[in-house]
Length: 374
Image (cartoon, rainbow, N blue to C red; front, side, top):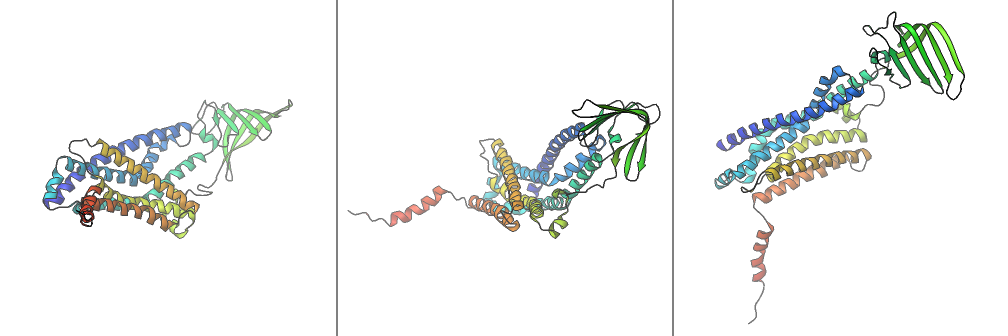
């Protein structure tokens, strides 16, 4: 009981501190990226906090896995440095005996990682994509800020409205529209305008204005005055039309439709859960510190191994989508291979095997077979 309780308490403290630090770093990076997207007009400024929350939820499996990995390595390294591991080894506890307490502490975190990678990851991506599509498919007049020139969603028109009231143009508003359509360009000005819905289309009805048209490359200019002129500024297009991003498809639908792309995305999600289990074994096999040296080199190797494993998972996902590797083949070769190698490394350290010891054991047998002649 003392062996397990002492490890759990220290693991909990280290895991909590690491989780807070990583969440702070990730949220800062996401905030900078989201504010940049809002400044470019890709997302609504009012949705910045929501998109940050969805992005954090989507990255939850990676954050939890890295926090658990760092917490275990730092805790075990501290025990090596303070010679606590020597005491446990002298009490009859081998290195493999630490797997039980580590998995007893980690299983709730591993369960959350599995659920988040299979269900929370696609849901958060779907919410983010819908918010961006809703903002991109809003009407052109909704994009306009009073007193500023604003480009339309298609990029073919530029709007300017002098004053705006609750998103509706009223009387005595000076309106300017510059448009380009194929080989023709036009400049339309009006004193006032109003918004009307005609079916699924949003129309800006201009009043008391003038329109100048010409053909690009031709000096001829057509000038016309009008009392009313309608300009289409938006439509009721359906959100989510077109091909869906694989990251937004639920795990259940991926299983129902086992195409190459769907299997690649499914391999990534399942791989996140399996890699978290492998990292527990790797942490125990990796955590060994020279008491006379610092722990910074060990932490660098932890980050390096995590990055390499994650990149190999991404490469494997691409191979599955291209048909170079099968879904089951990737899971067996990558994650199964990592598990076997990490367990072999752990057994080697548990048995305290080394090339020198193997050679010293083999040397007496070799010398016994040599006969020395007088």
